[in-house]
Length: 452
Image (cartoon, rainbow, N blue to C red; front, side, top):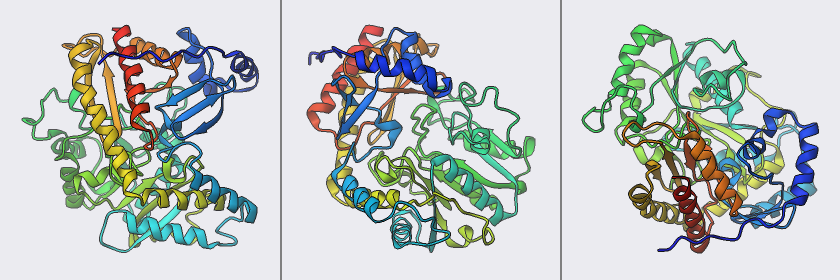
């Protein structure tokens, strides 16, 4: 198959003008993604509207979106059901704060999530604003339920930018550098990142030793009886879209059960159909005690949730949990529409279709493009790890940025990931059509080939 080259963005004058103003009024930390394109010769992009799998910039250029607002748009841009539900709610009331004057949509969405989250036991749900806030509240709940202070997370994991979630997060630059000191009683151990095994072992002969090593970790770094929760991403997100071996999560669950530790599944990026099932953890058969959701829960509107065992969720005392905007009625209305859209079997079929198409390309990438060190994924959650040398597996950060730039210039929006900044990740809306998917994969293949 020949690799097509869609027309580049022909005009970006208005985007340049807006970006010039942004440089004057926005803090550098917020502006950094566009600055990064500038640093490798790219041009700024200012979005004006979106529809389905497409974005349209201020100059009228159409771009295919493989980023989805960092995984917030599994149902696509401006999904008609989401737009209708949010618009109707806006006309009724925009905010009331559930803790002061409750409303039915909060209760009914909690009922729906309780039914969808794995586990044959009573559950309860708390709504919040963002993934970081939800992770932080999951830790609060776990500490209240167990009476223990410590929390264990994993290397290459990402859980947010608040002080506690930044402390749990592994990647130093740009997320943690200069922001210490960090929250106490937070610990990290190696994840099952088989391509870069911290123990220099190989799967499957290793027997998933990274879980066994936690017993020694509890002797050297933190007493096991002090650990309230293990917080784990079923598939690493920002860490590089790493899919652990099938034995990993069951072994981790057995360890937490053995020591009375709660298991918290961070499904902020892997949830809501991204992996081809409601939740990434479902592929393992593991049932977590608490499950954290955000991003695609409300079709692009800010909403997050913690759902878990009723007796655990009820551990904090009255007033111990809450949020002024958490469970905003407009976001809740959008979330109901998202769940309605996902009730269509075709929605999950879309994730599997994307996964099959990407898997078919993966072998070709590795065969033809020396820069491609590893291609891994599940459902529609795939990562391409770019390396300078396959033998040494030396991260190719600059080349990865160049690939993203080439894609961007040819009308494809992608984002990078990984502790070394050398992974291209795919977060396209799951409603993308076959032709558009193939077009995007063609652009991506061409960019990788040219950067090699």
